[in-house]
Length: 162
Image (cartoon, rainbow, N blue to C red):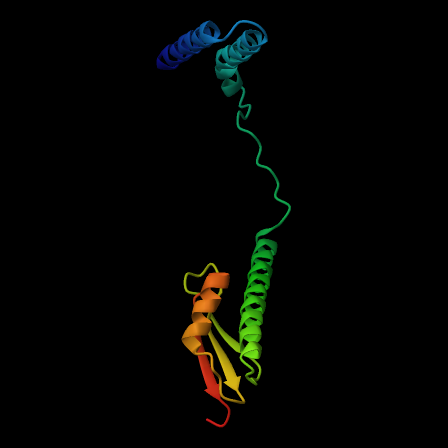
């Protein structure tokens, strides 16, 4: 009996909602479209118990994903690696350009990275081996990298022979 009562209430509320939408709709094509939608909704509510009695699934089927979980993980790892390479290239370009403008001889710039939150890898430190004295300070380079890329990192300038 409770199921019948619930069904009748659902049907009544669906009819009231359809009537309200129909009354509030502007005249013309919009009103006709909304009446059609309300009628389909009312029919769905009307026949819902019959579909449930016949064990017809009323949910949308799950979409098949093109990638399996291992492929997603590989894709994420590849994306992280490419992002890190792009960051290193950008920071390296800024450092090299600035050091060359300051007429400083330097060696291979190396980077240290970290994965603090487990979701993205970021550059935390750059080490620059210097073959000659440098007029640019590490703090100036850090500020320059931060303003041009938004990457905050520690720069260590090491004179060769230390």
